[in-house]
Image (cartoon, rainbow, N blue to C red):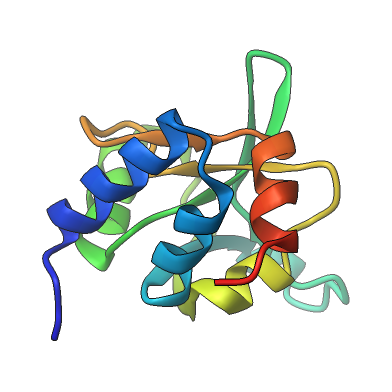
Length: 134
């Protein structure tokens, strides 16, 4: 019953392009995603904990996530020069429903950045996805 990552990505790309919130929700509900966090060893007693990767693109605030561990690993390796020696990067696997539930307000979603399969779900579409039932 497992489907390939490429299949998930191509289905998501089509659903996003068509702005089909119900289909995006169905695809999320049957998938897992990887979030990356970064913490600094020197801030070990920081009560806020690690920061989840996010970015801004074309004026949109976006949470960064990956459709598989390989894409997350490739991203980390491609960005090595951006990190300092004490930075610790960890990945967490979440099912799609949990990712949608815990999205920060006023954020869209950036899937697989720095890859050929990168996808952006803007905040407006993501709001519709979160409200829709699969």
